Image 1 (tube, one colour):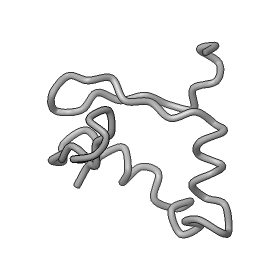
Image 2 (spheres, rainbow, N blue to C red):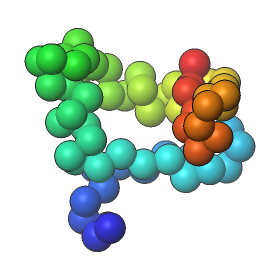
Image 3 (cartoon, one colour):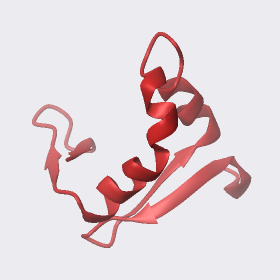
Image 4 (cartoon, rainbow, N blue to C red):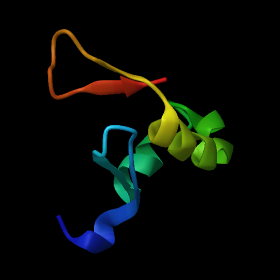
Length: 66
């Protein structure tokens, strides 16, 4: 991945660098997905920085932040 593909990156409370690409952000805010998230980008970053996370039981590479 080219560094220019990243929209932003932040560190979570466990010192993991979490990033989102422009393509993934467009997918998130697509009208068929979660268009309401378009105005919540800063809150999303804050949740990743300070929130709790849980590991998906079926996919150990996947986490959800709360």
